[in-house]
Amino acid sequence: MGATICTSRLPIPMQIHQTIGMSGDHERLARPLRVAIVGLGKIARDAHLPAIAENSDFDLVATVDPRGGWRDHPAFHSLDHLLESGISIDAVSICTPPDVRFGLAARAIARGIAVMLEKPPAVSVAEAKELERRAVASKVGLFTAWHARMAPGLAPARNALADRTITSGRVVWREDVRQWHPGQEWIFGEAGFGVFDPAINAISLLTAIDPSLSMLRSRLFIPAGRASPIRAEIALRGSAGGTIDCSFDFLWPGEPLWTIELSTNSRTVTLEEGAHRLAIDGNPVNLPDGDEYGGLYRKFAHVARRGIAECDVTPLALVERCLTDGARFSTRPFGF
Image (cartoon, rainbow, N blue to C red; front, top):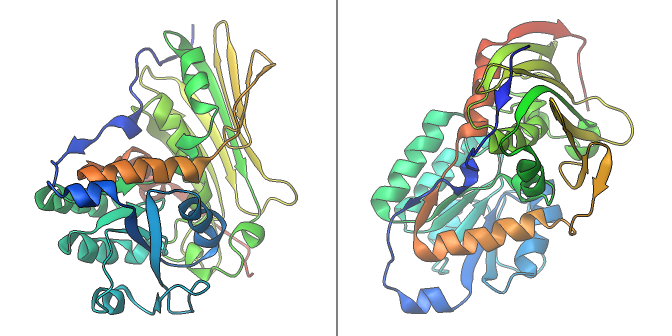
């Protein structure tokens, strides 16, 4: 028999958190949280702003972006300008490129402002853990927002795999960078993560099933003149030594493919459309409508009101290893 991956009784890493106490501010616990969005890129406009608008726990009071603001809300070119403005805020959602998230989050935490970090939460595990240390010391809420884990297929997929042994796995995560990140040159910079910016969603789902996954091998295909990969072929080893093969591609034409297939000796579980569709042994499972960012903001309200540091770095640690230790191959130049 080949190597296997044991998934029995594995905890969902997102539930690992550290309670850092209550502030005693009953008024803050009762009223809507005054939140600011820092970084008004595509994900903020497509996902964060609508989720805030639909959540009565939050009141959007300002935006921060050097390129402009959002509708009639007060707009600032920098977080420092907002902090100096006199506008009271309880929380910030940081949706900037990863390389500046640490500094922004550190300044917010120092002011007692709860922080949500878009994925990936920082450039490195060391940065993310330092933010967690500061949040715990300051009794300030901190939330690493792995939105794919809010997809409706994850929990039933985990249940279907509970107390079973995975014998093989295949991940296909392919999309067109020009569609999902148009003109965003930063994504292929030193701190941009390249194809792992979307692929970390797949990693976050996998590590919710098996948080002990490790890198077996990594092949990175990097366009000439760029610093981060546009394609990657990865093999991951599970907690019992089995292998999950992953194919990540940022130049995929047409409809995206976001699929995870995991097989045991007696069962196959397939997650499609980023875990919004689920099949067990080829039979579709009825799922509720997905509301990933709505789920994130419901969770963030809890974190912010109660001063909880919920900082899961498991997906980031695995991606960091793939990027640091992967074999690198040069490919033809890429341009938007």
